[in-house]
Image 1 (cartoon, helix red, strand yellow):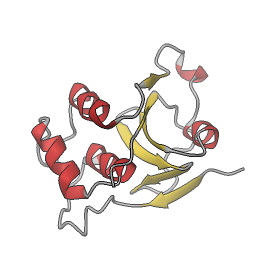
Image 2: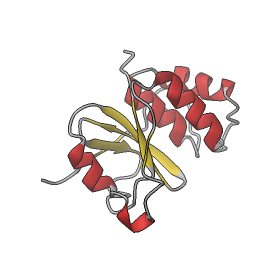
Image 3: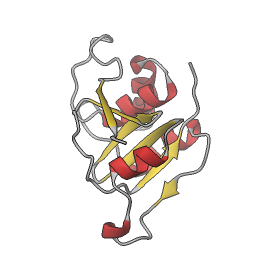
Image 4: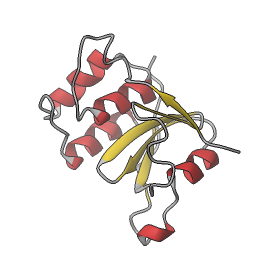
Length: 136
């Protein structure tokens, strides 16, 4: 079974934004179903600056507010023993998640990886993930 990918900006263009380094905002909007503008404001209130990535501590704090389960970490394993994006997406076939790989986060909804990059990371190792609650 192949992992599926869907290109989505999480509503960024429709909201009138054209930012870069907003993966935390996009993944929050996609995984919870909230509008991009609301996710942007939440991340901004947590310390995100325009066109700048969020600090990891701020990302953790924001995601934990909207998660339906605690952070599931693979950081205690050696990097070569962590699951790849494709492996974990196949394992978690249903539900809404945010996967964290090195320097990037993205939404996974019902086993489909959703990001602005197509098939960017099927072999990248996952550092951990959040199970997200649907708000919409």
